Every structure is written in structure tokens, then in C-alpha cells.
Image 1 (cartoon, rainbow, N blue to C red):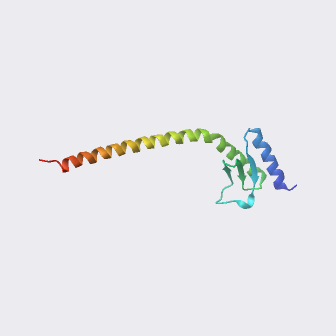
Image 2 (cartoon, rainbow, N blue to C red; image 1 turned 120 degrees about the horizontal axis):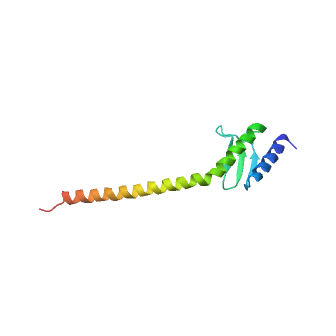
Length: 110
């Protein structure tokens, strides 16, 4: 077995200890845009773009924390989006009210 396959196997054992149903794929030659790792949530794959053992473990733990914090962050994103929608709706109603008031003034019959 190659060193890369051994490392990938070790990291997959670590991810199982966290109770996460993901697989880890080591792909050092696929490193894109300077990133050391990424999570594909749909396919449940953690990609690690280094075969340096110490760095790979560090990247894995970073990605594990990303996965674990995602539900919490998603709740705040949902709340922020609700607030934005509320503000947009109110701005739209206020704009329409102002336009209608101006039209009444402009087209007031004497």
C-alpha cells in the first residue's frame, strides 16, 4: 500500500470516530485555488489536497468542524434571510404608498 492510501485509511477511521457519515479522499494533485481541503456535502466526501500527514490531519479537523458548525450557521443565515425579506417587503410597501400619494397630488382634480 502507498503512503497516500495508508493516510487516507487513517483519516477515514478518524472521521468515523466523530460519527460522521463521510469519506475522506486524499487528492494532493487536485489542489485548487490554494485550498487544502473542501467538503462536498451532497456526496458526503471530504477532499484533502495534501499528502503531508500532519497537515492532512489538521485539514481534516478543520473540515470536521466546518461540518459540525454548519447547522448552527445555517440557522443564522435563515434568520438573516428572513430579516432581509421583511425589510424588502416593508420598503416595497412604503415605496408604493409614497408613489400613490405623489400620484394623488399630481393628478388632483381641482
